[in-house]
Image 1 (tube, rainbow, N blue to C red):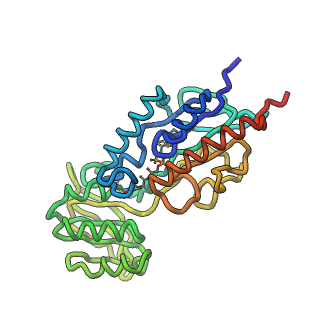
Image 2: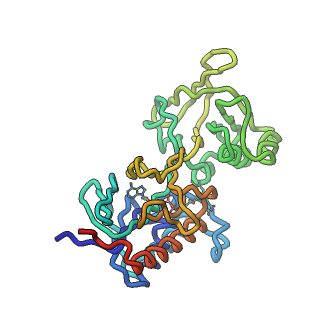
Image 3: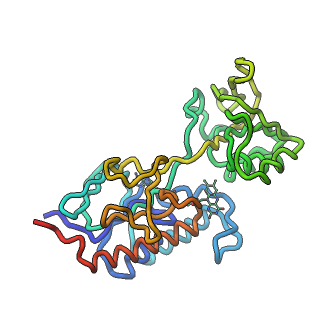
Length: 311
Ligand SMILES: Cc1cc2nc3c(=O)[nH]c(=O)nc-3n(C[C@H](O)[C@H](O)[C@H](O)COP(=O)(O)OP(=O)(O)OC[C@H]3O[C@@H](n4cnc5c(N)ncnc54)[C@H](O)[C@@H]3O)c2cc1C
């Protein structure tokens, strides 16, 4: 008979690792499945707001989290979850390579930056195209860059870029930038920042590295060309929740998993933590806190025997 784990944690970053530490300390029999360790946390660049670590960065913090997992001898299974099913109170977690069963599931799969899906974007990724201004803008000292996006991430990227780069274009498809007023005002005050409104990015070009970007000027219907050394794409994040069936109705319009303050979803035994949830603030500390809550709730759920196999 297939082993039925007490729990399966999907994701091994801030949310998943904190959940794993708590499940292990309760001596529960669980499995952790993840595509990588660290997820978006590794990409967080300088981190100055995680308590206990006044000055750290995503890579260093992830190493600390890994050490903690190692101390508890938790070895994540390196695989991608592609489907989730529930029958008779038992979940089946299907991955690319295997299939596992558990009484409960904690989803801590975070989110992925949205793509523009224009020619050149994929080919020039890591060759001037980046989805992480915090990580990569410092590599563009005195260069010319374009930030594509119209919200707070793009505002912040533009402000940071203004301090490092010779020139920053901020390209938004909207008539004006959106987000926090004080950020927009700061962005506008930077002499080396040029905001281009009503602009639809069409193509990123270059051979070895990015050389420029073409966009449709919606005001004139003309294709315009900008010579840039780097393109930073900040057009939003997509929660990694595709493997959760839509008919469970646990996701909101953005694909975020809807949880209550106890990280429960409306499917008994299914919990979620971190950036994949509908909690609006996407931060390491919040993912850690939710991971802990989810793990403690898993224990409570198992003790209540609600999972019991109905035959
Ligand atoms: C540029 C940038 C800067 C940031 N700066 C800060 C900061 O200064 N301070 C701060 O607190 N926060 C910051 N954040 C936010 C922070 O990175 C996130 O809030 C945090 O990483 C969320 O953790 P998580 O565990 O929810 O998800 P993630 O860190 O995204 O981890 C998701 C995990 O799930 C796994 N996974 C995903 N899909 C699957 C699947 N289908 N199957 C198996 N595994 C899967 C991944 O491999 C990974 O292990 C920043 C984010 C970015 C992008």
